[in-house]
Length: 362
Ligand SMILES: NC(=O)c1ccc[n+]([C@@H]2O[C@H](COP(=O)([O-])OP(=O)(O)OC[C@H]3O[C@@H](n4cnc5c(N)ncnc54)[C@H](O)[C@@H]3O)[C@@H](O)[C@H]2O)c1
Ligand SMILES: [Zn+2]
Ligand SMILES: [Zn+2]
Image 1 (cartoon, helix red, strand yellow):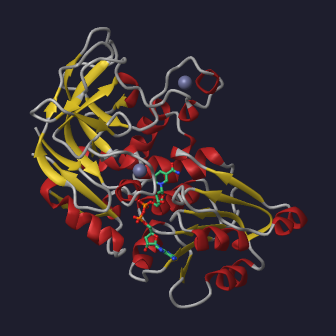
Image 2 (tube, rainbow, N blue to C red):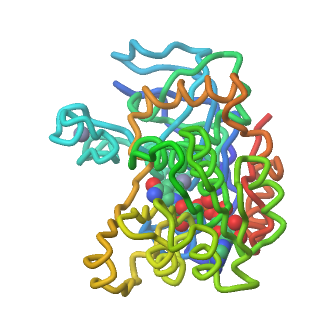
Protein backbone atom coordinates (compact mmCIF):
# COMPACT_ATOMS: atom_id res chain seq x y z
CA UNK A 1 0.00 0.00 0.00
CA UNK A 2 1.00 3.65 -0.36
CA UNK A 3 1.90 5.55 2.80
CA UNK A 4 3.57 8.84 3.74
CA UNK A 5 6.55 7.91 5.92
CA UNK A 6 8.38 10.23 8.32
CA UNK A 7 12.03 9.30 7.67
CA UNK A 8 13.51 12.18 9.69
CA UNK A 9 12.36 15.10 11.80
CA UNK A 10 11.95 18.47 10.06
CA UNK A 11 11.93 16.86 6.61
CA UNK A 12 9.08 16.26 4.14
CA UNK A 13 7.20 12.95 4.55
CA UNK A 14 8.12 10.45 1.84
CA UNK A 15 5.54 8.61 -0.21
CA UNK A 16 6.52 4.92 -0.14
CA UNK A 17 5.23 1.43 -0.78
CA UNK A 18 4.70 -0.12 2.65
CA UNK A 19 3.77 -3.64 3.76
CA UNK A 20 0.89 -4.02 6.21
CA UNK A 21 0.44 -7.38 7.99
CA UNK A 22 -2.77 -9.42 8.18
CA UNK A 23 -4.85 -8.90 11.34
CA UNK A 24 -3.75 -10.98 14.32
CA UNK A 25 -5.86 -11.74 17.41
CA UNK A 26 -7.78 -8.66 18.55
CA UNK A 27 -6.81 -6.65 15.45
CA UNK A 28 -8.86 -5.10 12.67
CA UNK A 29 -7.67 -4.17 9.18
CA UNK A 30 -9.30 -0.94 7.97
CA UNK A 31 -9.28 0.64 4.52
CA UNK A 32 -8.66 4.32 5.21
CA UNK A 33 -11.33 6.49 3.59
CA UNK A 34 -10.24 9.86 4.95
CA UNK A 35 -7.80 11.32 7.44
CA UNK A 36 -7.82 14.79 8.92
CA UNK A 37 -4.48 16.50 9.47
CA UNK A 38 -3.98 17.59 13.07
CA UNK A 39 -1.36 20.01 14.37
CA UNK A 40 -0.02 17.22 16.62
CA UNK A 41 1.26 15.44 13.46
CA UNK A 42 3.25 18.58 12.68
CA UNK A 43 4.48 18.78 16.29
CA UNK A 44 5.88 15.23 15.89
CA UNK A 45 7.57 16.15 12.59
CA UNK A 46 9.13 19.20 14.27
CA UNK A 47 10.38 17.09 17.21
CA UNK A 48 8.04 18.64 19.83
CA UNK A 49 6.56 15.22 20.64
CA UNK A 50 9.10 12.37 20.70
CA UNK A 51 8.47 9.66 18.08
CA UNK A 52 11.47 8.03 16.43
CA UNK A 53 11.48 7.70 12.61
CA UNK A 54 10.73 5.79 10.47
CA UNK A 55 7.13 6.27 11.45
CA UNK A 56 3.78 6.78 9.70
CA UNK A 57 1.83 9.68 11.18
CA UNK A 58 -1.88 10.48 10.88
CA UNK A 59 -4.31 9.91 13.74
CA UNK A 60 -7.68 11.38 12.68
CA UNK A 61 -9.16 8.67 10.44
CA UNK A 62 -12.39 7.15 9.27
CA UNK A 63 -12.60 4.07 7.11
CA UNK A 64 -14.21 0.74 6.30
CA UNK A 65 -13.35 -2.58 7.94
CA UNK A 66 -11.72 -4.92 5.47
CA UNK A 67 -10.77 -7.94 7.62
CA UNK A 68 -10.83 -9.01 11.27
CA UNK A 69 -8.51 -11.13 13.38
CA UNK A 70 -9.37 -13.93 15.83
CA UNK A 71 -11.64 -12.99 18.71
CA UNK A 72 -13.20 -9.89 17.14
CA UNK A 73 -16.92 -9.73 17.84
CA UNK A 74 -17.62 -5.98 17.67
CA UNK A 75 -16.65 -5.45 14.02
CA UNK A 76 -17.34 -7.13 10.69
CA UNK A 77 -16.04 -6.43 7.17
CA UNK A 78 -17.93 -3.50 5.66
CA UNK A 79 -18.46 -1.67 8.98
CA UNK A 80 -17.76 2.06 8.95
CA UNK A 81 -15.40 3.09 11.73
CA UNK A 82 -13.56 6.03 13.26
CA UNK A 83 -10.07 5.49 14.71
CA UNK A 84 -8.91 7.22 17.90
CA UNK A 85 -5.59 7.49 19.74
CA UNK A 86 -7.32 6.77 23.04
CA UNK A 87 -7.20 2.97 22.94
CA UNK A 88 -8.01 1.53 26.36
CA UNK A 89 -6.98 -1.68 28.12
CA UNK A 90 -10.15 -1.96 30.19
CA UNK A 91 -8.44 -3.19 33.36
CA UNK A 92 -6.07 -0.47 34.67
CA UNK A 93 -7.09 1.94 37.42
CA UNK A 94 -7.91 4.70 34.94
CA UNK A 95 -10.06 2.50 32.69
CA UNK A 96 -11.98 0.92 35.55
CA UNK A 97 -12.20 4.33 37.29
CA UNK A 98 -14.03 5.81 34.29
CA UNK A 99 -11.21 7.74 32.66
CA UNK A 100 -10.11 5.40 29.82
CA UNK A 101 -8.46 8.31 27.93
CA UNK A 102 -5.76 8.19 30.64
CA UNK A 103 -5.24 4.41 30.20
CA UNK A 104 -1.77 3.31 31.31
CA UNK A 105 -1.22 0.92 28.38
CA UNK A 106 -2.73 3.05 25.67
CA UNK A 107 -0.23 2.31 22.93
CA UNK A 108 -0.83 -1.38 22.41
CA UNK A 109 1.79 -2.78 20.14
CA UNK A 110 1.99 -6.44 19.26
CA UNK A 111 3.61 -8.80 21.79
CA UNK A 112 7.46 -8.69 22.00
CA UNK A 113 9.10 -10.52 19.13
CA UNK A 114 6.05 -10.49 16.78
CA UNK A 115 6.17 -9.18 13.24
CA UNK A 116 5.74 -5.40 12.98
CA UNK A 117 2.29 -4.29 11.84
CA UNK A 118 4.01 -2.00 9.30
CA UNK A 119 7.27 -2.61 7.45
CA UNK A 120 9.24 -1.77 4.33
CA UNK A 121 9.14 -4.22 1.40
CA UNK A 122 12.61 -5.35 2.64
CA UNK A 123 11.07 -6.24 6.02
CA UNK A 124 12.41 -3.37 8.13
CA UNK A 125 9.88 -2.32 10.76
CA UNK A 126 8.12 1.06 10.55
CA UNK A 127 6.67 2.53 13.73
CA UNK A 128 2.90 2.90 13.99
CA UNK A 129 1.67 6.20 15.49
CA UNK A 130 -0.92 5.79 18.24
CA UNK A 131 -2.07 2.38 16.92
CA UNK A 132 -3.38 4.13 13.80
CA UNK A 133 -0.97 5.63 11.19
CA UNK A 134 -3.67 6.98 8.92
CA UNK A 135 -1.45 8.67 6.33
CA UNK A 136 -1.70 5.30 4.57
CA UNK A 137 -4.23 3.46 2.44
CA UNK A 138 -4.85 0.92 5.22
CA UNK A 139 -4.56 0.73 8.99
CA UNK A 140 -4.04 -2.33 11.20
CA UNK A 141 -5.48 -1.42 14.59
CA UNK A 142 -6.26 -3.02 17.93
CA UNK A 143 -10.05 -3.24 18.11
CA UNK A 144 -10.02 -0.85 21.08
CA UNK A 145 -8.78 1.98 18.81
CA UNK A 146 -11.98 1.85 16.79
CA UNK A 147 -15.66 2.67 17.08
CA UNK A 148 -18.37 1.57 14.67
CA UNK A 149 -20.50 4.42 13.30
CA UNK A 150 -23.73 4.94 11.35
CA UNK A 151 -23.50 4.11 7.64
CA UNK A 152 -25.23 7.37 6.67
CA UNK A 153 -22.39 9.49 8.11
CA UNK A 154 -20.05 10.72 5.34
CA UNK A 155 -16.56 9.41 6.12
CA UNK A 156 -14.72 12.57 4.97
CA UNK A 157 -16.46 14.43 7.80
CA UNK A 158 -16.55 11.55 10.29
CA UNK A 159 -12.74 11.51 10.33
CA UNK A 160 -12.61 14.95 11.99
CA UNK A 161 -14.24 13.38 15.05
CA UNK A 162 -11.25 11.01 15.37
CA UNK A 163 -9.08 13.66 17.04
CA UNK A 164 -9.71 17.40 16.62
CA UNK A 165 -13.47 17.46 17.16
CA UNK A 166 -13.39 15.01 20.05
CA UNK A 167 -10.53 16.96 21.62
CA UNK A 168 -12.20 20.37 21.34
CA UNK A 169 -15.81 19.36 21.87
CA UNK A 170 -14.84 17.05 24.73
CA UNK A 171 -12.76 19.78 26.41
CA UNK A 172 -15.97 21.82 26.65
CA UNK A 173 -18.40 18.93 27.31
CA UNK A 174 -16.33 16.53 29.44
CA UNK A 175 -13.23 18.15 30.96
CA UNK A 176 -15.04 21.10 32.52
CA UNK A 177 -18.60 21.86 33.42
CA UNK A 178 -19.69 25.10 31.70
CA UNK A 179 -22.88 26.54 33.18
CA UNK A 180 -25.33 28.11 30.70
CA UNK A 181 -24.46 31.77 30.20
CA UNK A 182 -20.81 31.48 31.29
CA UNK A 183 -18.23 33.48 29.35
CA UNK A 184 -15.75 31.50 27.27
CA UNK A 185 -12.60 32.39 25.34
CA UNK A 186 -11.13 30.17 22.65
CA UNK A 187 -7.49 30.98 21.80
CA UNK A 188 -6.64 29.47 18.40
CA UNK A 189 -9.31 28.77 15.78
CA UNK A 190 -7.87 25.66 14.11
CA UNK A 191 -9.75 22.38 14.05
CA UNK A 192 -9.40 21.88 17.80
CA UNK A 193 -10.32 25.44 18.80
CA UNK A 194 -13.34 25.59 16.47
CA UNK A 195 -14.59 22.36 18.02
CA UNK A 196 -14.15 23.76 21.57
CA UNK A 197 -16.05 26.83 20.35
CA UNK A 198 -18.91 24.65 19.09
CA UNK A 199 -18.93 22.66 22.33
CA UNK A 200 -19.27 25.93 24.25
CA UNK A 201 -22.17 26.97 22.02
CA UNK A 202 -23.85 23.56 22.39
CA UNK A 203 -23.77 23.74 26.22
CA UNK A 204 -25.24 27.26 26.13
CA UNK A 205 -22.27 29.49 26.99
CA UNK A 206 -22.95 33.24 26.99
CA UNK A 207 -20.12 35.28 25.51
CA UNK A 208 -17.95 33.11 23.23
CA UNK A 209 -14.83 35.05 22.29
CA UNK A 210 -12.64 33.71 19.49
CA UNK A 211 -8.98 34.82 19.50
CA UNK A 212 -6.68 34.20 16.54
CA UNK A 213 -3.84 35.96 14.75
CA UNK A 214 -5.44 35.25 11.35
CA UNK A 215 -8.37 37.62 10.93
CA UNK A 216 -9.82 35.59 8.01
CA UNK A 217 -10.85 32.92 10.55
CA UNK A 218 -13.38 35.21 12.23
CA UNK A 219 -16.10 34.79 9.60
CA UNK A 220 -15.93 31.08 10.19
CA UNK A 221 -15.75 31.44 13.98
CA UNK A 222 -18.88 33.62 13.94
CA UNK A 223 -20.75 31.10 11.77
CA UNK A 224 -19.87 28.42 14.30
CA UNK A 225 -21.05 30.44 17.31
CA UNK A 226 -18.52 33.12 18.31
CA UNK A 227 -20.17 36.24 19.73
CA UNK A 228 -16.93 38.30 19.68
CA UNK A 229 -13.62 38.02 17.83
CA UNK A 230 -10.21 39.35 18.88
CA UNK A 231 -7.39 39.74 16.37
CA UNK A 232 -4.25 38.84 18.34
CA UNK A 233 -2.02 40.31 15.61
CA UNK A 234 -3.62 43.70 15.99
CA UNK A 235 -4.07 44.47 19.68
CA UNK A 236 -3.21 43.06 23.11
CA UNK A 237 -5.63 40.11 23.25
CA UNK A 238 -5.58 40.01 27.07
CA UNK A 239 -6.73 43.63 27.37
CA UNK A 240 -9.36 43.07 24.67
CA UNK A 241 -10.82 40.02 26.45
CA UNK A 242 -10.78 41.80 29.82
CA UNK A 243 -12.68 44.68 28.28
CA UNK A 244 -15.32 42.45 26.64
CA UNK A 245 -15.85 40.28 29.72
CA UNK A 246 -15.48 43.01 32.33
CA UNK A 247 -12.38 41.57 33.99
CA UNK A 248 -11.76 38.09 32.58
CA UNK A 249 -13.65 35.04 31.36
CA UNK A 250 -15.11 32.11 33.28
CA UNK A 251 -13.39 29.59 30.96
CA UNK A 252 -10.40 30.05 28.65
CA UNK A 253 -9.42 27.26 26.28
CA UNK A 254 -5.85 27.50 24.95
CA UNK A 255 -5.96 25.59 21.66
CA UNK A 256 -2.58 26.45 20.10
CA UNK A 257 0.24 25.08 22.30
CA UNK A 258 2.59 28.08 22.57
CA UNK A 259 4.22 29.48 25.72
CA UNK A 260 2.96 33.08 25.22
CA UNK A 261 -0.63 32.01 24.49
CA UNK A 262 -0.69 29.77 27.58
CA UNK A 263 0.39 32.83 29.60
CA UNK A 264 -2.29 34.91 27.87
CA UNK A 265 -4.88 32.23 28.65
CA UNK A 266 -4.16 32.42 32.39
CA UNK A 267 -4.19 36.23 32.26
CA UNK A 268 -7.56 36.26 30.43
CA UNK A 269 -9.13 33.96 33.03
CA UNK A 270 -11.27 35.92 35.48
CA UNK A 271 -11.60 35.56 39.25
CA UNK A 272 -12.65 32.01 40.07
CA UNK A 273 -12.34 31.04 36.43
CA UNK A 274 -10.71 28.04 34.76
CA UNK A 275 -7.93 27.88 32.19
CA UNK A 276 -8.09 24.74 30.06
CA UNK A 277 -4.85 23.76 28.33
CA UNK A 278 -5.71 21.86 25.17
CA UNK A 279 -2.80 22.89 22.91
CA UNK A 280 0.33 20.77 23.32
CA UNK A 281 3.34 22.93 24.21
CA UNK A 282 6.51 21.17 22.93
CA UNK A 283 7.83 18.89 25.70
CA UNK A 284 11.14 20.78 25.64
CA UNK A 285 9.54 24.04 26.88
CA UNK A 286 8.42 25.33 30.30
CA UNK A 287 5.82 28.03 30.99
CA UNK A 288 6.19 30.63 33.73
CA UNK A 289 3.02 32.01 35.30
CA UNK A 290 2.20 34.02 38.43
CA UNK A 291 1.27 31.68 41.28
CA UNK A 292 -0.07 34.60 43.31
CA UNK A 293 -2.47 35.39 40.47
CA UNK A 294 -3.85 31.84 40.82
CA UNK A 295 -4.05 31.91 44.61
CA UNK A 296 -5.47 35.36 45.18
CA UNK A 297 -8.08 35.07 42.43
CA UNK A 298 -8.71 31.36 42.92
CA UNK A 299 -8.10 30.55 39.28
CA UNK A 300 -7.82 26.93 38.23
CA UNK A 301 -5.71 25.44 35.46
CA UNK A 302 -6.45 22.03 33.99
CA UNK A 303 -5.04 20.07 31.10
CA UNK A 304 -7.45 18.36 28.73
CA UNK A 305 -6.26 15.24 26.93
CA UNK A 306 -8.21 14.02 23.90
CA UNK A 307 -11.33 15.75 25.19
CA UNK A 308 -11.41 13.49 28.28
CA UNK A 309 -13.17 11.02 25.99
CA UNK A 310 -14.87 7.68 26.32
CA UNK A 311 -14.83 7.55 22.56
CA UNK A 312 -17.12 4.55 21.96
CA UNK A 313 -19.74 6.48 23.94
CA UNK A 314 -18.91 10.01 22.75
CA UNK A 315 -18.28 9.65 19.02
CA UNK A 316 -21.65 8.16 17.95
CA UNK A 317 -23.25 11.03 19.92
CA UNK A 318 -21.12 13.61 18.09
CA UNK A 319 -22.22 12.06 14.79
CA UNK A 320 -25.84 12.47 15.85
CA UNK A 321 -25.04 16.11 16.67
CA UNK A 322 -23.73 16.54 13.12
CA UNK A 323 -26.62 14.78 11.44
CA UNK A 324 -29.10 16.75 13.60
CA UNK A 325 -27.46 20.01 12.47
CA UNK A 326 -26.04 20.98 15.88
CA UNK A 327 -22.38 20.29 15.12
CA UNK A 328 -21.03 21.93 11.97
CA UNK A 329 -18.27 19.96 10.30
CA UNK A 330 -18.59 20.91 6.61
CA UNK A 331 -17.59 24.49 7.40
CA UNK A 332 -14.45 23.35 9.22
CA UNK A 333 -12.96 21.66 6.15
CA UNK A 334 -10.76 24.11 4.22
CA UNK A 335 -9.68 21.56 1.63
CA UNK A 336 -9.68 17.91 0.63
CA UNK A 337 -6.48 16.54 -0.91
CA UNK A 338 -4.83 13.31 -2.06
CA UNK A 339 -2.15 11.68 0.12
CA UNK A 340 0.71 12.80 -2.13
CA UNK A 341 -0.04 16.45 -1.29
CA UNK A 342 0.41 15.94 2.45
CA UNK A 343 3.60 18.06 2.66
CA UNK A 344 1.84 21.03 0.99
CA UNK A 345 -0.88 20.64 3.61
CA UNK A 346 1.67 20.97 6.42
CA UNK A 347 3.07 24.12 4.76
CA UNK A 348 -0.42 25.63 4.72
CA UNK A 349 -0.91 24.64 8.37
CA UNK A 350 2.39 26.31 9.37
CA UNK A 351 1.23 29.53 7.71
CA UNK A 352 -2.19 29.39 9.44
CA UNK A 353 -3.96 29.37 6.06
CA UNK A 354 -6.43 26.59 6.89
CA UNK A 355 -8.95 25.36 9.45
CA UNK A 356 -8.96 21.58 8.88
CA UNK A 357 -7.55 19.74 5.85
CA UNK A 358 -8.68 16.23 4.98
CA UNK A 359 -6.77 13.62 2.98
CA UNK A 360 -9.24 11.54 0.98
CA UNK A 361 -8.42 8.12 -0.46
CA UNK A 362 -10.05 6.56 -3.54
N1 LIG B 1 -4.92 17.98 24.18
C1 LIG B 1 -5.05 17.10 23.22
O1 LIG B 1 -5.40 15.94 23.47
C2 LIG B 1 -4.81 17.48 21.80
C3 LIG B 1 -5.31 16.72 20.75
C4 LIG B 1 -5.16 17.19 19.44
C5 LIG B 1 -4.45 18.35 19.19
N2 LIG B 1 -3.93 19.03 20.24
C6 LIG B 1 -3.17 20.27 20.08
O2 LIG B 1 -4.09 21.34 19.91
C7 LIG B 1 -3.41 22.42 19.27
C8 LIG B 1 -4.25 22.94 18.11
O3 LIG B 1 -4.33 21.96 17.09
P1 LIG B 1 -5.00 22.33 15.68
O4 LIG B 1 -4.86 21.10 14.86
O5 LIG B 1 -6.31 22.96 15.87
O6 LIG B 1 -3.94 23.43 15.17
P2 LIG B 1 -4.02 24.49 13.96
O7 LIG B 1 -2.64 24.75 13.54
O8 LIG B 1 -5.02 24.06 12.97
O9 LIG B 1 -4.64 25.79 14.68
C9 LIG B 1 -3.89 26.69 15.45
C10 LIG B 1 -4.56 28.07 15.34
O10 LIG B 1 -3.84 28.98 16.17
C11 LIG B 1 -3.67 30.23 15.48
N3 LIG B 1 -2.50 30.89 16.05
C12 LIG B 1 -1.20 30.54 15.92
N4 LIG B 1 -0.41 31.35 16.65
C13 LIG B 1 -1.23 32.24 17.26
C14 LIG B 1 -1.02 33.31 18.20
N5 LIG B 1 0.20 33.63 18.61
N6 LIG B 1 -2.11 34.00 18.64
C15 LIG B 1 -3.35 33.68 18.22
N7 LIG B 1 -3.61 32.67 17.34
C16 LIG B 1 -2.56 31.96 16.88
C17 LIG B 1 -3.55 29.82 14.03
O11 LIG B 1 -3.88 30.90 13.16
C18 LIG B 1 -4.55 28.66 13.94
O12 LIG B 1 -5.85 29.17 13.64
C19 LIG B 1 -2.04 21.88 18.88
O13 LIG B 1 -1.11 22.20 19.88
C20 LIG B 1 -2.26 20.38 18.88
O14 LIG B 1 -1.06 19.66 19.08
C21 LIG B 1 -4.12 18.64 21.53
ZN1 LIG C 1 -4.65 15.21 16.92
ZN1 LIG D 1 -6.37 1.00 30.88
